[in-house]
Length: 335
Image (tube, rainbow, N blue to C red; front, side):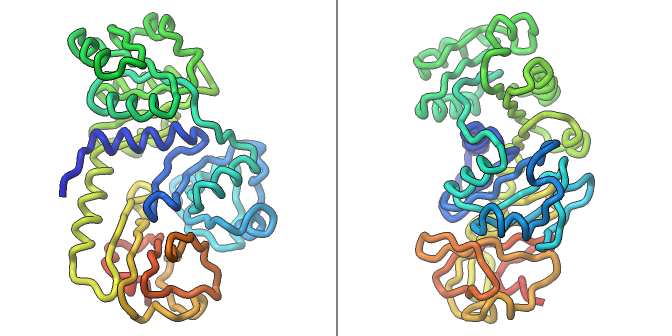
């Protein structure tokens, strides 16, 4: 297995910039389905509504897999009432995700311009992806030799030689006028300060903060940083997913795995390879472990948001969200 943490961090940042309303986006089923995390703002139509109300009045083609309220994480049932300030994670296809967010008043347009602060490998990978989709990119980098290198590699980007934590330089660069700022220097403290500064001077700006060291996550989560990406988390999850896929399992295999809600839950995509105790039975008849949810079924490329009468069949891919840890086979979801 080979993984490039800097490239994977850039891919995650790009996904967020393509849908700036989201705090984070994780892809499953080869990009056909996504877990999208958003925060319900004050005065939003979702405030005071139950999960069941969403299904009957907005769309039945998504499922809310988790709600973060303060320090509590809930895998909600239909009676759970949403509130302003809640951070909700839901599963849907990309098309349904966009239409749902638009229907509840969120901006679904990709950013048109961005400033990347720091010109390292992640910045190069990210800028390359954004430019190909027509997004205007400026990169601020203090090393002159690296600026010259980036100018050759990214002729359509504007490369600025200077210190990204210089407030006057940021103003001159037009930080108030861009749609987004991505802080990706090699120093976490600088990235945090840059994102806080960007959000202070422009309420509408989308900020993405790269955090290299995994520490003080509780403090970081309390700050208004917008979206935060952790290359080490991304790498660890890819390795764990790879290792679990190769463990002896009964009738299924781990395809993709992500930690959710500061590692208090897991989202795992299983490939169903043979008949077992979970196949060919209606979901309402399966005795699932508590805090465990079947989020989608991918059947021959079609994403099914499951209802009680749906079944899991051999050949399907199935995504499970659970606060229980360490599932290595799909049958682990049963009590």
